[in-house]
Image (cartoon, rainbow, N blue to C red; front, side):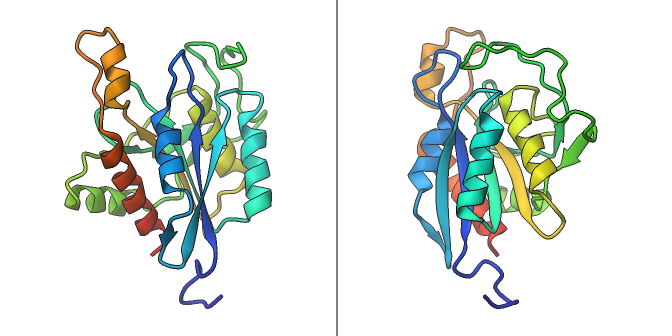
Length: 211
């Protein structure tokens, strides 16, 4: 592996979550599995589904990191109510569940890591990613809150245990899919983004990460 191409013959770990909250699908996993096995230059995308369970998600991510030894990690999650692809800037050390996870757990004001730092920043080049997505006419913006559900927990845990200055790692939230929005009786209507657009967006993010 040459210094000029640190990603040669390596892989990027791409994770998505199983459905939650009564939904039969989750855009994060639909996108992740759509990209599984693709090559970004010499880098292979390895996709892994994480459980939407506070007690299991970090362990599942850790097992994937050990098994795959990736050069970079991108975790995806669903953000109901958002209309754009939103790379996350910061993960905070708190779990505050608005709804129960898929195992019925609903932690309140609990730390992700006891005595851990208050927050971690993303290890992704967020501004460069944002400019690139907008050049591709993909609706995108940088988010400054990853929430306090399992998505934030995974993001925080990733940065706490694996992230460092010479590694690219972070989290991106995706909008609901049109078929999900159609099932949600909300006013105003829940925004959504077609799967093909979301897949293209994440592929472009991975390209930025690997170059």
